[in-house]
Length: 196
Image (tube, rainbow, N blue to C red):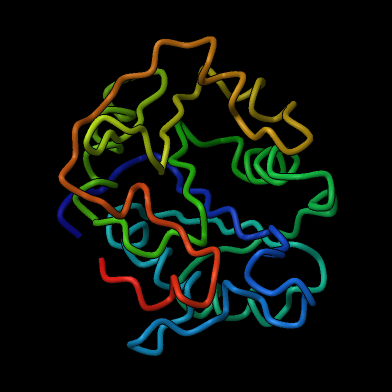
């Protein structure tokens, strides 16, 4: 680990992934990348490399995913309100880690983010920034860092809009990164073979 942040990473892994497999039989977060690593575990690795505390939020019934993320080094919490959307899952993660001094919120279907990007966000959150987001070629991506001043607002989220309201009402500190992974998620089987 090159930098030990005091922030907590939240890895949101409670979605259904219905575009990946409309039947719901295969959890895309457990689908293997070409090197055999499950998508969610690959998304966790750069967080685990920089942050001492990584909490993954999963839906009830996703025990195989929970075990895989736990084995990778994440703490796991179950969001009983996951059906209500990303906002509810994010709130569950904040409640489980409310003693944190800040959060870096990542999505479990984005496995190609570089550790350097995580470190850049963590440095600014630890330095007192309110909200921090990576920018690649003019487009805002993930993960997004939130300072402790947003604890109550994050804990009150619900529905499927996530933290969009906070992002729209706050001055977001942009960080230019040379990391296309901040925009690249996995929606289809073909995406599994995309290059970083």
